Image (cartoon, rainbow, N blue to C red; front, side, top):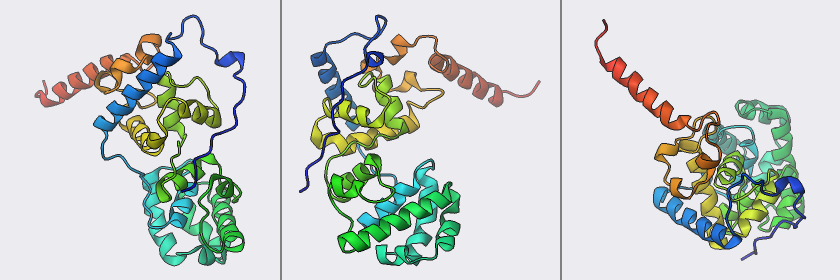
Length: 265
């Protein structure tokens, strides 16, 4: 089985170093806390999986490229017709660009995405005999494929552990204090040191799901979070808009519900 690859290490800039007011813990304490987070996510979301619908590695590759700046739900609405019409790399590579653009238009940025999926399809046909490659290096050589897409394909289609750093992974892991980086490659590197390799793919799915249903951007549900005991964010961001606002918002929602149940005066 192909081995997972680690991003090149870079020296951390002074901006990434903890401030005096930051949550303090040793490296060993952070690793232990990360393992507790892994276990709690597994208990909270045992059925988490890739949200994109696919049957083949090629379909997953295309769906992942289309998911950029688009919801997985919308991609899943578009891809059945796309794959029914052009089911293989050979077919998609030879498809009329205007027709591909029209079919994927609901996913946004349809011209760029059409070029990306057709270029990738041509690369697969011309350089890999029509089969999606199963190594990081080869996947990154395809047009339109960066580490996020490559990790999705490797982890879900080929069983090669990988950390998929999307907006949810960036936000949730930053709030958990598992990374202070903003660049996805540096975030991936930080998490590789804390999360057991066998857990990388499923950890990504669980964190992404957690980010959608609980640790949302504007109004995180801290009062209902299964990771609350191991999350420093509410303590270090007291008073930040959307935090405590989590409890206050929950109380407000309850009050509005009660008002709706009451007879009008």
